[in-house]
Image 1 (spheres, rainbow, N blue to C red):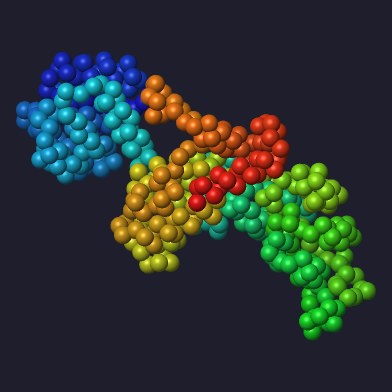
Image 2 (tube, rainbow, N blue to C red; image 1 turned 135 degrees about the vertical axis):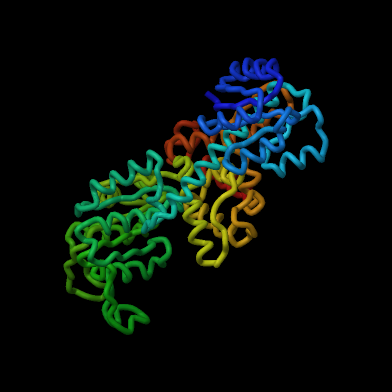
Length: 454
């Protein structure tokens, strides 16, 4: 069913006609011929929307609407009248009406308005529920979520956390791979030990070996003192190698030997130092393709990929977008001393429709910006970045024969490629295989799409 609707009109024939028409469109319909009876029905039953006539004997539609919204602000009321003018519309809106429809109208117009109203009510209720849920203390936002993929992720973390096997965490940029690594560490028997992280892509190749293994005094220019490497610093705990796909090829054999022997030799030293460390690596790149192209050693790949954890992209997490948004709103409002407490339902719809190529990191940035720009207690559509307000979905849906709905071949290709990528969870090699493209061609197209969206 598309929603449970209460119709209120003093004309019985109108009620029966609307009931028949809306039932054909899969609505569940109740009706009353007086506002007083309708109010009584509202105390006994739960409805998704109310449709009321404006001019009725006794209590008119404006007063009826006012009475409803006083007790249930989240129940949308659609006011119908044959006397459509600005004053009447303003009175209805002031009374809390969700929409205003003037007779005569097409039943399809009412049906579409009811669809919007029902969706508005459901989304408003969900935002309210998530607002309360997001207030529960949580150590990290990335694991906050009630979607099936997040429940599956938490279950996997629980099963493998208390082992010493190496873990490879994969996922798109911004999904929260480091926070997953910290959760694995905290829930393991090493939780009381150090958690040491390094971004392999952020350290110059000439310094990365020294950072990992350490160096002695005078081992190279500017080595004025001894440096303890991260393997030794993390002894008894966890070493997190982020962006391991960027590890220089020349350094990979040394890393492999250290993982096999559980010993490191600092640069400039002849002494090997043992370490007791669990290795957790992460990448947003396709390491299997890197192995095929001889940019990453196959033996090292198998050494770090004993256990695989895939962090889902935000676009697959459904209403987790709203739950995370609410948490980010509360955090940002507290830091900025703002009174922002939640999302407007229309803004929530925009957040749900957007595909979030930057994932949780992009969402957090978006919410912090919106809190900084917003002026009310709720974030509105106009507070959101333009790219989200004007977002075009990657899927294609055409109805009717309106030439204005037709798209260029380039736009059709763009949407299809993005949809294939979504289905294969961002695996570009698999997407290229399905699309019949070589990887470099696919990468060029995706780079162009990114530039067009900026």
